[in-house]
Image 1 (cartoon, helix red, strand yellow):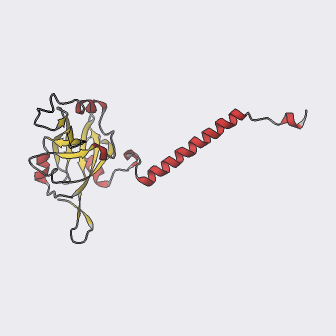
Image 2 (cartoon, one colour; image 1 turned 45 degrees about the horizontal axis):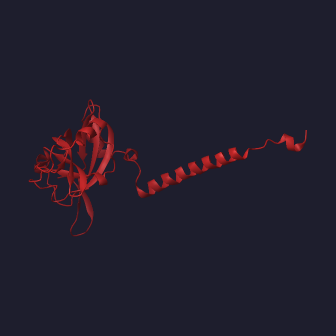
Length: 208
């Protein structure tokens, strides 16, 4: 047997497939590194903070924490007349905190948004428990409204009670998380507020 016959030959097609597979794995690694650098990783990879763990420990069978949005409070959020907290959908850090059933409810259109006194959007809401920065529980609803040119999830049906119990100010920043408890009840939790000092330009965390 000649030396040429003793050496197994690699088919050119197999070699091409091997190179393509290696290239795909390399591209996947580069994409993951870019997501980490740009902060666009899935919120499920963000560990829940200590304040949220304390909130969840008070609820039965609390699970599935998700980072939803870092929210700067605007005058419209604190208006007793508008009576809602908006979470613009295009600013959400996690879009999978709702179940398919909840999304179906929120995406059901209003009967006639032109004649309705409310914003264009869902006519039904999803019942939610909201835990404010003082760790007080509130019964509220989430709805889906079109505010201006953007769609938002809005907290209504009890948001004024949250305003009454907390000394919110315009430009206060809170981070909003969700989790499930009991038989799957949705809960929203607002972090301790961060307020920017008007004199020093520094930010500080505070409780109302």
